[in-house]
Length: 266
Image 1: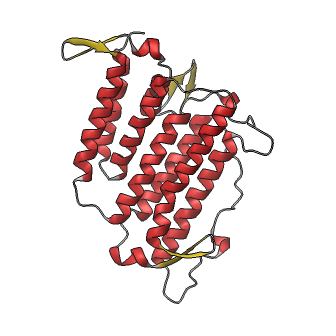
Image 2: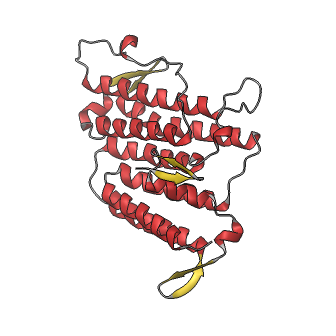
Image 3: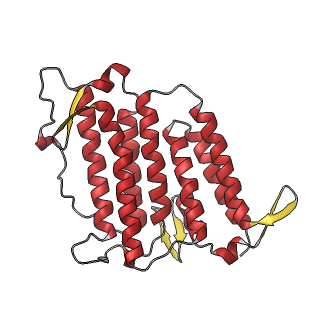
């Protein structure tokens, strides 16, 4: 769906990403402005925290259900991806290709690496689950995308869309791994591991490189607004709700955020 961002039309921006970008524009002054809830005046800041509370309620409901272990593990990766999404949504294009220091990756290269590793991890882990006992434990290299990725082009919205698709594919492939398959042998970075270990690598890798993105942005002199800080935590909880399979609940909370932002007059 097309959204107007910063005066331009962009077909890669979902309603939720547009709402995250709206949150990111809220500084302390904007957050202190009035907002009405249940007939009483509070402030815009609470509009965001009220939505976080909605997300927490949805998470409690979703986490109380019966879920395969693999889905619960991958929900942690979706939580981590939500935090990344909140960090980079709406970033100016000029920041994507600036090198923070000599020899360090710009944001585009870090995000491209995250995409390539997400795809490789998914293929490697699915192979470990599905391979016949007589097949090699390590997936043949020619069945994997390159280790060194080609940088993903376009603005941040296009990059996020690619990452969102890759995460969704991982969840589809590996969200319902049978309990007996969780201990099947696998290989990671030369270590003998199992499928359970490989599943936990998804979230850890996203967290690792989200921190790298934070360090890059800090080195470039970019600072998060308070609104973005709140939105990151909200996006992380919504991500975990979605990762647990409660997609309708996740979309409902996203819609509430968009509605509440639309009701704010700044």
